[in-house]
Image (tube, rainbow, N blue to C red; front, side, top):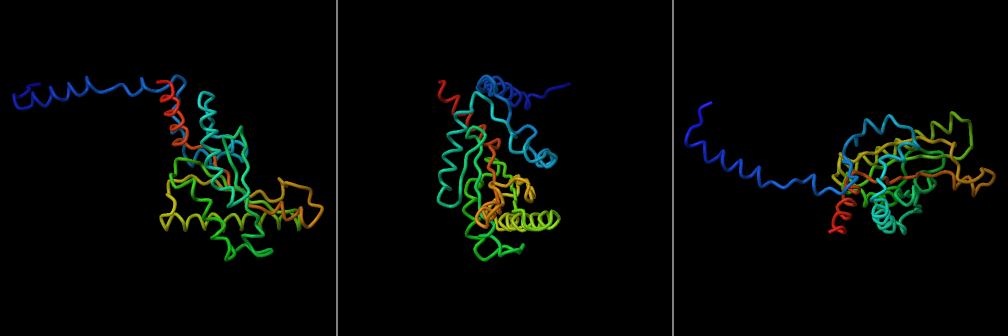
Length: 226
């Protein structure tokens, strides 16, 4: 191939830039695994509830850093909903009684729902920071078919509400939201009183570390080792 005189300086500059370019992979700590790999809605939609809560996994090298970041995010919601930590403090869940979100036996969100749900969006402004799992629960009142249909319809109402927040630009359409209609299969308490049944009627919003949070933890680890 013939190289003209005019093209030569450009080629030299390009070669110099390539030579001077830093090896970004060398800055990655030992044990680093790209958290964005296989992070897709299609992957998670094919998973059952328990594997979804467990995925993505957090590498042992950054477990403590991730836990601190998760606990910090969870603490900011403690006056907005019931908050619990799980998975060695790497996941937090916000619980909202469905008696506060819906009228009795109804599937349409009440007038109070917007005020109860909007604060839960704060940790997920960055769509890569957390994966969200929605779990809708009922008590054991009525037939199994009735409970399943009620759970599914209420779950759809919450999911649709979140889609309106996407349309409004409050959250990104890149956010991964995995919905589960649980019915009455995972009660918090025995369904042997009105009070305990009301505790079992709930929406759970799980915040599971996403790739941005995991990558931020790797960056923190690198900084501390310098």
